[in-house]
Image 1: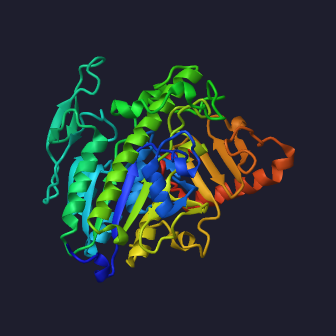
Image 2 (image 1 turned 90 degrees about the horizontal axis):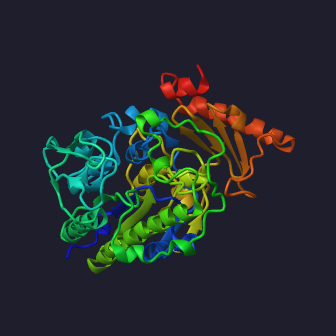
Amino acid sequence: MRMPSSAQGKPNILLILTDDQRFNTIHALGNPEIQTPNLDRLAAEGAAFTHAHIPGGTSGAVCMPSRAMLHSGVTLFHLYEAGSAIPREHTTLGQCFREQGYTTIGIGKWHNGTESYARSFTDGDNIFFGGMWDHWNVPVCSFHPDGRYENKIQVIPNFQHANHPMELIAERIRPGVHSTELLTESALSFLRQEQDREQPFLLSLAYLAPHDPRSMPERFRNMYDPEKLQLPPNFTEEHPFPIGINASIGEDRDENLAAHPRSGQEVRRHIADYYAMISHLDENIGKLLDCLEETGQRENTIVVFTGDNGLSVGCHGLMGKQSLYEDSIRVPLILSGPGIPKGERRDDYVYLLDIYPTLCDLAGLPAPASVEGQSFRPALEGRGQARADLYFAYTHLIRGVKDRRWKLLCYRLHPEENQLFDLEADPWEMHNLYGDPACAAVRQRLEKRLLEYKAQWETPSSPFTRQFWQE
């Protein structure tokens, strides 16, 4: 067995990314109904950021820009084509570590184009170049050292309702093997190989779960009785006004997963399946942690666990993530490993795109000039605060800003429905104070901050900017 890579002064990094997992889905972090013993274990071994966020999205498929921000460290309006690809002028996380001598391994979902994947990783397996799929039959690719991913197959996603095939970049399907287990199997294989290598590694493991279609081995489904689960306090049968998501381009897909008006019974069933998917993930994450222990790599491996975006699942009468409510923009974030405090919680505001420069900081590497995120290592180590406030945007439809207490949401189609929430008194965002005269000064201050962020973040040429601000 090789010596830990601390001998070379660089930690290993295992970056675990889940799909559609919102912030309040870990037992140890305040959800009494969900069973996540291995994520609880990870939180006990490290530091959990309870207020990690995405800035929103410039696509109905929010995961695409979110993942592009994570892997490029670039802010929302500086992405290329909503993150469908990462241009060469944006040095990716994997590319950065690869150029500094790391073995970089990419497994699972990569929603940001084949070219950026190829320059990010030196190895990998079971690569899924897509957004979502049947978890039991995922079309994947092997790793190609030449960076060419050109094999395409024809598939009919829903053959009961259509006969028009779509084209996918893929080479094979492992029928009947659940995506979570398929990807864990690949990661375990690499972790066992890495114990015999001299180079430190960065392993990026991107799961497809708990994204729908929510299907999992039956024993996990049996863990949750929908009738015994609580509805979220902000459950409503319908959202009080139309946000404006566009059915013609499929933005409303998530909202059609449950009937209108929403019924508590149906939403409880969705929550049960959602929790079952996460418990299945949790078991597999436990296998990864066990493998690190067994191979002597745990003490010198930074494990990062996070999600690409949240999900409403009944909150505010919504099912998806095409909004700027807390359930859609907040994600879990846990870090564990060398130099990281154990069993601690941080309520600092951070973005997903801040993970990139933070990992550079922890590994002693310079962050590339293209990275716009900021390291939260001082907050992680308890010696400084991260961001004081945050900016949010969803396409051309919504803008938002929040500080440590107040949150403002502005809607393009229905400005009369703009919202102001006191997050300290109302964390579930149920009481709109926008028109309250007692809150006028707060509203005006946040509206001014919104304009300041617009000038800092948004690009005048962006159609999302022009349409929202009517320029």
